[in-house]
Image 1 (cartoon, rainbow, N blue to C red):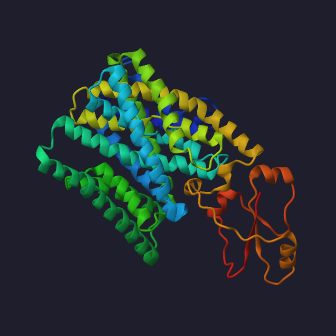
Image 2: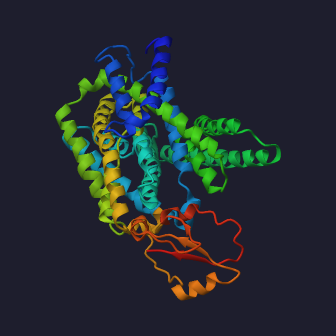
Image 3: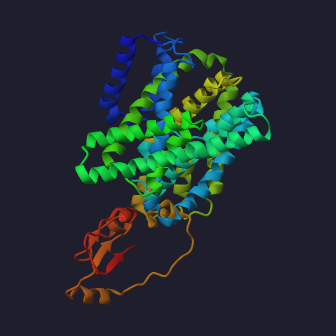
Length: 484
């Protein structure tokens, strides 16, 4: 590990370069994960030797644990069940099984092509089924992409973490023979499925409730609310681990508890939490790059590149094509969602769990996962801007099926209900009455731009922003939607 001064210098470079280069990176084929992963590779013992970080390094474990806990918590908080409505379970149930199929196909590739044992191969399949939150964050912030599609990616990212983490933890227990006999496995299952999630739900839900009550009575400054949110993540992880459960599942459950119990954390926490997580992720990319610099020579490169190609080009697009077959989406949307399953930091963090657990061949698995992540970071990072711009232009030129839905749940709902309609003459008569209706112009962007005209007194609300629209105090006024 580098000395104290060198470590501070690296952190300084990460923070300043990220800020100064953010506009350039956003418009280029580069991505921050790629930049900092390569930085770590160059600084590592395989090239310059400035950083010599072992996979078992305690500082790496601390950074990795903090990062994964924050990412899982934020994933859960951003599964906005209020916005998805009562049908939020539909996309979760649709997208969850797809992750299981991706794990199986990935494990088969690792076992048959690279010769891993089946237990380790399934670990690797699960690690490489997790999507990278850094690349996806830039995509789900791009408002050129219809909201429903961005939400599909968000739901999938949160769902697959919930699937892959227990799979890896169970496989680690199998590899280490931690649970002996039926009784041992029942105890292990209870600790995994109950202890961590229950503690996390309690800390997340009750913690957010307590903050809202205290804030309503004596007003808590925003900077302390942001710190409080970080405290909830660490408290959930620590309490669950101390009780014999899994801290990472508790961190996810804590975030879900905030949502499930209809509590809120201030937007300042979500912003600060994302910034903290992003800073930790970029530092982790440098550290992992340094680790990989010293162990990539263990990897049989050509067969591993074949596995990477299978996972990126065939497995995910094929599985998502099946999973989303009945969704109300255009071919462009199918292609967009199927392509963007970048492997990244989450895969490396999960691989580190196996290394720290002392699983046989775990370091070779980490090196293999690292090479696949490097390939994915190059390909997906380079195509993010181009593909998003292409899809955005398609949405501007014509009305796509997914634009008619504002949530991911709506894409999977096929029960059409009758919507009352009124004629132009009826609306014209209503506009002359004292209690006039509110007219929402919810035409698709392509129709709105092409027509160039508006209904008098109408309010322009893009269709995928209807869920966010605040009608204010409308009392009993009728709302009329003008759509295309």
